[in-house]
Amino acid sequence: MTVRLRAHHLLCMLTFIGKGYTPEFTENYRRIAARLSSGEPIELVSGPDDICAPLADLSDAHCLQDSVFDRDEKAAAAVSALLNRPICEGSVIMPDAAFLSLLRRAFRAGDIRSGCARCEWSPLCTDVAEKGFPDVLVASAGHAEKL
Image 1 (tube, one colour):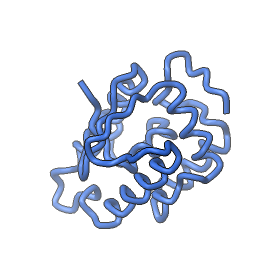
Image 2: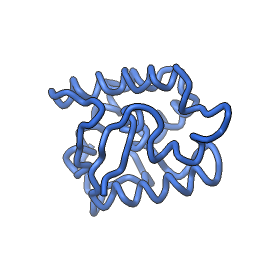
Image 3: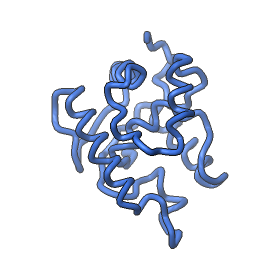
Image 4: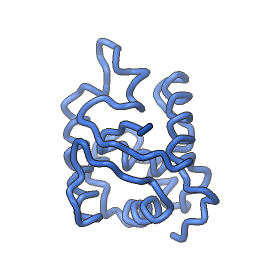
């Protein structure tokens, strides 16, 4: 199986420590974090993804707002530039130690955070990154990343 993620969730997963919009959202995200940590591949999608699932059916679903699609575009462009390859709908990415470490270094440096603009979670993510990503729930086996 693959984990279906929208582009800006490539950034969000780097700092996920178990906080979210609702208990259902958070529990779903914890399950996805475990799947990603076990090395399950990521397939990029456009629009609501596996993380959005608990919120996608709400009439005012955050995941359907234009600002969120804008975050996806900016995150895809930033990650594409970092990886020196296109990241778009249908791309498959392996969330291995090298990938997570590369993204976390760039995230911590602020190099790939254009997709984080105006996000309510940005202060928390900044704090997690500045502290060296302690207690993150998406980690490669052994979580031996060097930052």
